[in-house]
Length: 81
Image (cartoon, rainbow, N blue to C red; front, side, top):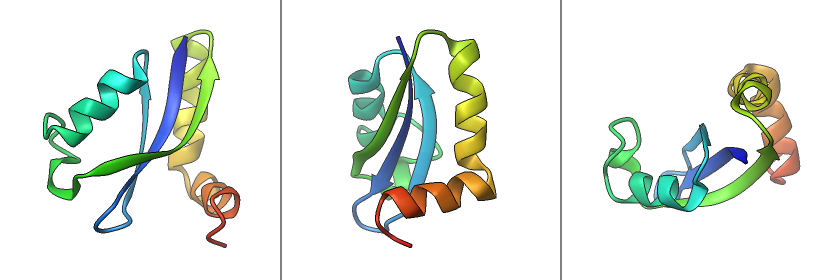
């Protein structure tokens, strides 16, 4: 299984969209300061995830969620808009 996930920084509210095969391990990496792009904004909490059978299926969805239309979609489903 491959997961497309959205995490949110608890202090700043900043969001990060990523892709991983082991979601719990990846969240620990984000919160442990092992990811350069997220370590300044820890701690993070998982706010959204989708499951796919392959990386090839998951990648277009990750790209969509990082686009402006995808950000609007996330605001809507997370109750922010």
